[in-house]
Image 1 (cartoon, helix red, strand yellow):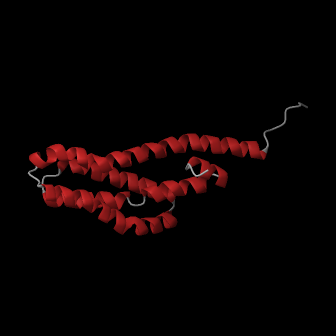
Image 2: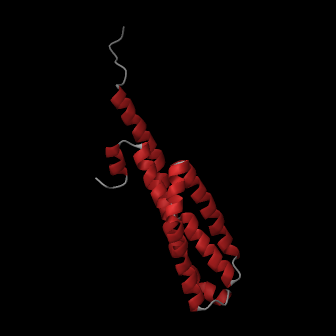
Image 3: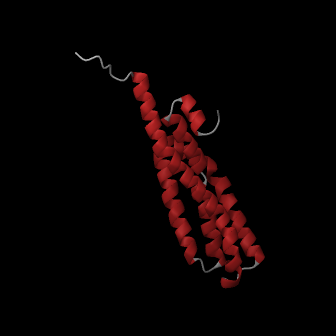
Amino acid sequence: MTNEQPLGEAALLQEGYRRAAWRLIPFLVFLFVLAWIDRVNVGFAKLSMLSDLNFSEAVYGLGAGIFFIGYFLFEVPSNLLLEKIGAKKTLARITILWGITSIAMAWVKSESAFYVLRFLLGAFEAGFFPGACCISPTGFRPSGARRSTGCS
């Protein structure tokens, strides 16, 4: 017999949490950065959008603001869907639809298309933050979840 003892259950669990955190946290940070870029991108696009598409300041302002109307209206339904189908599927749904809508913004030619896509962008992004926060408590023990979300 050898004197080596197998890893205890607590040590094995700790290693699993560490590996999950190293896979999950960088991905979520990357998505948060993309969400921030997506929100401020319309401000940078304004510089050429107003002249290229002949949009007025009012069209731009309404389009920039309509994002938050979609976000507000779909926050609760997205959270209900999160509870029903789980965080992984919710984040997959959000990122896929969000990406498709962001790509479609490249082909905007009219005011109405701009309004619709900005509204959809807000609607699709609505459940992102709760979904990302939901993964931490379900994937980590309570102390690890607090540490991973910066609440400790």
